[in-house]
Amino acid sequence: MATAENEYTLDTVRETLVRQEDTIVFGLIERSKFPFNSQTYDQNYLQIPGFCGSLVEFVFTNTEIVQAGRYKNPEENPFFPENLSLSLVPSYPFTKFLHPGAASININKSLWKMYFHDLLPLFVASGDDGNYAQTAASDLSLLQAISKRVHYGKFVAEVKFRESPQDYEPLIRSKDKEGLMKLLTFKSVEEMVKKRVEKKATLFGQDISLNSSDDSKGKQKFDPSVASKLYEKWVIPLTKEVQVEYLLRRLD
Amino acid sequence: MATAENEYTLDTVRETLVRQEDTIVFGLIERSKFPFNSQTYDQNYLQIPGFCGSLVEFVFTNTEIVQAGRYKNPEENPFFPENLSLSLVPSYPFTKFLHPGAASININKSLWKMYFHDLLPLFVASGDDGNYAQTAASDLSLLQAISKRVHYGKFVAEVKFRESPQDYEPLIRSKDKEGLMKLLTFKSVEEMVKKRVEKKATLFGQDISLNSSDDSKGKQKFDPSVASKLYEKWVIPLTKEVQVEYLLRRLD
View 1 (cartoon, rainbow over the protein chains, first blue to last red):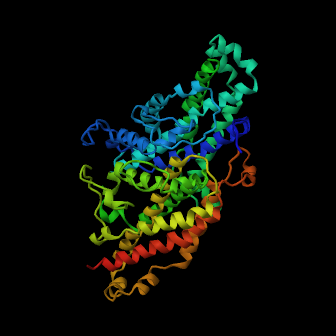
View 2 (view 1 turned 60 degrees about the horizontal axis):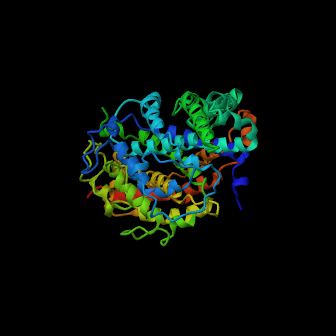
């Protein structure tokens, strides 16, 4: 049976992060099927009595309510926790691995801004094809995957802390954010992750034909450099931010 | 501007079908992240006042309501149309390409049964990890993608009919289902589709490492033969069934 000790180790955490790359790359490719579809984000598009906001906000809020059980798992973090009620969801014995302070870390508000203001314009064609609900659904899946990846920093930090508490404790006690950040940074690993993500985006985003020598000539569904840029500019630094925030609460 | 004549042609329809393969393969790989999670399908799991059914039914029904605008596009077909109201969704001028009889063709009830009874047990590990809402969400995306692909048969049939009405009209008038099925069947094309889908599942489902010679040695996240079996046993024959149903209404 999985226990906290064998479920989350440096190896399993690393494996999960690698697997999450695939989900994020699939999500980027799927969102790029649709043009920008600005109505999805327009506060004036939707005319639903009792709801004030854009279609994408409507889809996020209500999907989180419908899938409330998702947020019983400490690996998941809602975008609109204020609307969520977990009272009707039967409980499940998810492994208790994190320090309780983890529950107060949720940077989805920053991820939301990053996604809609910075990331989307990087890779989505301008235009409007009327598929606003599908667009919002694609945004939801992709942003959920990015959020899960970034907040997985809590697990990364806990695993690292348990491996060598003596390295972390003094920095935590002196609230040395910079020192913690330095301890958590491995430039060569970050470079490898960026390269692997770009390779995945290249492979998964190509047009596949049966004649294998044609694959690389096929047009790409998606610019692979966007995937590595997403990791370089946001996923990697924000994951480390989550790790630092988590560690700062670790001895409370 | 896209018109019915240049938006849907043999070439664009074929391109769309090929692109939909990727979405379906991504969906298979994503669903296979979770074990079977039988609670998702258990009528007794959910205790929500006023709702009688399983979690997956709850997620489908409510997501379709939240994303109602999706079903303004004739390319999409709901699983629970009886709960759907499109009255609040602003209209969009989707291309009118199909014969009006198309609206009455919806084989999602068969797809639902096929998916949960036949397909899922083929590729999902047994077990329970508590991620029921995520499991239902993965089922939803994948089944929506399969449904879209199969019902795209309406567009395939319309394009083929417009290319050579003289071949179809006599068979339609004599309600010759078998003759229509024969006219719509190209064994060599079907073989190619199955092979391409399996190749995609192999490429997208492999563990990607930076040392490219290692890629093929990596363990697969997903058995690629399941993708071609899905196409062989269900997607291809059911798409043709939709085509025949559509053609039978084409002269009404």
